[in-house]
Length: 532
Image 1 (cartoon, rainbow, N blue to C red):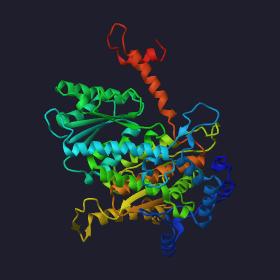
Image 2: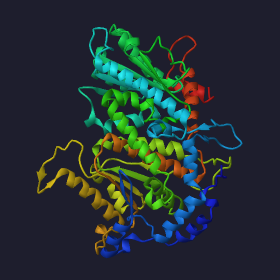
Image 3: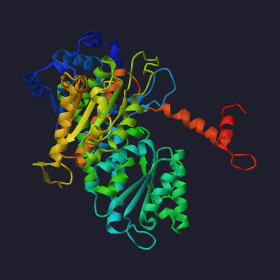
Image 4: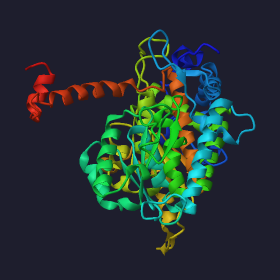
């Protein structure tokens, strides 16, 4: 294994420090040069075209970013990760010290998987899921009254909710039959109550997802749902499924109709292609569609091994993001899908990116002296255009943007209005915003002046299908880990969420009066803070 270095230790970094003083100016290019850049600056893959001409880069900067990728051995580290190297570790301090093998879940298509043992485990769980889905479809598994199940309530939080929920929302047109899925994540009891009002419990399965089997929010919500089933005279053991770690407190056949396993070497935010997402997606989409979903992810996992950054969209996005954030000092990133189906995808990326790369300790055990992960946010277009795009175009804060779009709609339901289809209007808006941010507009009226020079990229695919969604998910996962490698931080733990949990437990203890009465919030706060 080569020594892992941060980008600042590379020779390329010194060159980029000079180049950042005069980055490429997008607002000064003429129509002819824009046309030339449009044709030159495209990274193509099987599923995507990444147009990056509206980034503040030229050939020299791209060449040095290539040097940085090579000198930091980003591709080598990515392959090590896929092969099962210990990635979740920080030198010299206690850490989880385990592999990060989310890619093993979709390496089932390879003749020689990178990590045979992990892929065999993933394949075994897939076989269990296929059998379960076949039994559901054949009517072998039914409720107390002999009726089939048409609803599934997915109960999880964090990585057990955001990724799976975003994929479900994205693939709603591909559902099988009249099945539907509902999600409960927030420990707010109103969230659970609202869902329980929507479903027919008699014909519902409940999928409880927690790797440790001890996640407080998830177990609390599970108990609320169990109480609803018992009140309705239903046996939860005939309705409840578990997705958990083998041997966890939830690995209990007496409580669950079926149990599917998730493994320590797959982090929650990278777990949508494991049983964490596949049980729910299998119920809704059917087995054949989740195989296509996995196939799309697998294709990108191998495409991401391409060492030439101009031919590797995931690596190129990572390096462009590094250039904008670590050199041009742009603190945030807006991910803007021009697809209503992806309306929860930015929320998933907020967790996947910010929980992965929101770190200030290097893998070498030293505090870093440079910015790491950006703040990630976003909303679908064209709604966002009527909300926050004013700041994107004329605000004092420059926000790099990543647009995601599709040439065709999912439902193919459309109509010509004023000579164009709605999908054409959607794509036209995406392209117009990209050009406007990059090029701006000169005007004698300062109120109508647009400075431009605001970097962005456009990721285009043909149509949002299960395979494309799997590819999109894997593309961003690879981008995130490439950036973590470049910053030399551990992208696979999440210690930052633990302190709040510990303090919450102390508050809960303080809320319990020794005489069994509930204390008021103010008194419990003062007691916990040590003031009383």
